[in-house]
Length: 587
Ligand code: M6R
Image (cartoon, rainbow, N blue to C red; front, side, top):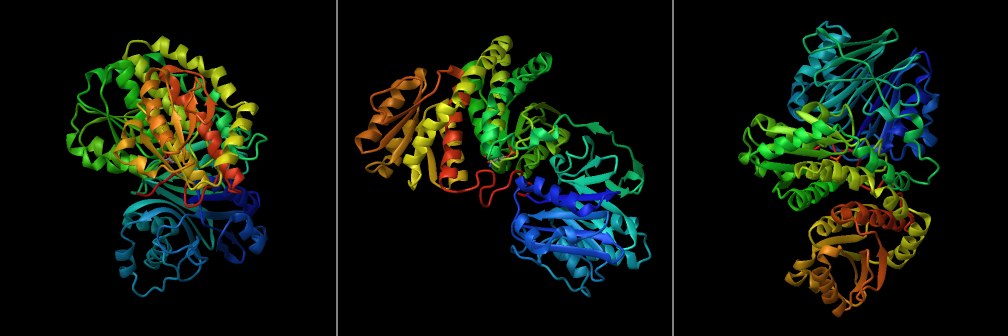
């Protein structure tokens, strides 16, 4: 999703903003641009394409000045081209803005500005023109900005600069925006990694906050123009943590971190987890809601709750949750699962639940994200920054937290912690060099396949679904998961000589799933077993430890590695799959 960054201070802004844009690349983008305020006015460079390529062509560093704003665009309104890239200007070319989010009423606003000529097809450009119009009424830059913001419907994080005004104005509603406070200046950005190498001091903004950043510091106001106070926090992440740690790609680095991140996920306050377990017992209706991998963690969680704690939960894709909203009451408990805490569909589900008086508990990685602010309570995954667009370590942390809750619900918190702690060496071995080589060999066998199918039952079905998502999103090979028992109801028709089918086996359900594998084999399928024991039906075996309830964590790790190897073999960038974004802040 779009990333924005602004800087005002004593240093030259363009190199800082360029680094910031590169650090925000993980959010996904298709265009980039920068506007700098200097003695010549507001100078701008922008284009569609990769930041490095744009920089090579246009050289952002030519822009002199110590106040500037920059943007990575991920197209929503208007095609991907140079003109639609941000920053956007008003008609006088003295006001530049960058915007993340969607202005829902931009058409109506444009109609109001019928005398203005718009250059782009974006919803965002209207913001600069509105400020211009408000200035014509004799308002100050700040007043014009606030008045403009008050007219916007939708979601936004906006930065604005104006010729002759030594300041950056900013506002947020629904889209992330944080302030970074360094000795030499102030940052305004969609995400902390963009400025983490300069400062760890951050201010998390709230919806409808308006920021005036000058060389003397930052002041925050509400839409009525009254100053508000927000605490300054210190982030725990250091700059090293967000770098690749010597690996070629973040994806591999993050996969390898999982022996540690599972241990960090279970660093919870026992009394809080047990109290949440009490709430689950008392609730009338429980929902797990998430998207993508987080949805698969929800599905895994529902099997774990059933298996470990004999408790039924409803699982819903956040984007489908509106179809179940009428079941929500004040006694319903909704768990919203999201690594970023910014996924628009999840936040919409949270808001719908709260309107009906349901209690919302977030399971989230990003402290300060919208989900941490909007849920009634949240558990942090503590997985550290995940830069690769694919969820790997955050997925297993989500599953670990689901398992911990299930154990607490069964009155076995300690047992749960011990079991999860026991995964440390298992995961270490699963990510070892020899395992990676074994999976590289498998990837070489599969790299030219058009289709890969994955089957499992119960917990292993949820793992198959997550495995299929990993393979397809990073290698672009079509991968699809089926519940083992469903094969004969249709999918068997897809099996031809050599069709690769991965089979996830746990000791407690091996009979049935091995019989499903045999059905596939009898039709020519090539069977890749993922299990603790070798079975005759396997053509290739990926040995994983038997971890019982925690199999979903152990069994997904080889598939994450396989997906990574497939992408690398195909010459793709595993950290930035095409068409995808790390944080999906639009519906
Ligand atoms: O930040 P969230 O966990 O809410 O994100 C949900 C999905 O967008 C995310 O899991 C997505 O499916 C990833 N690309 C999976 O690797």
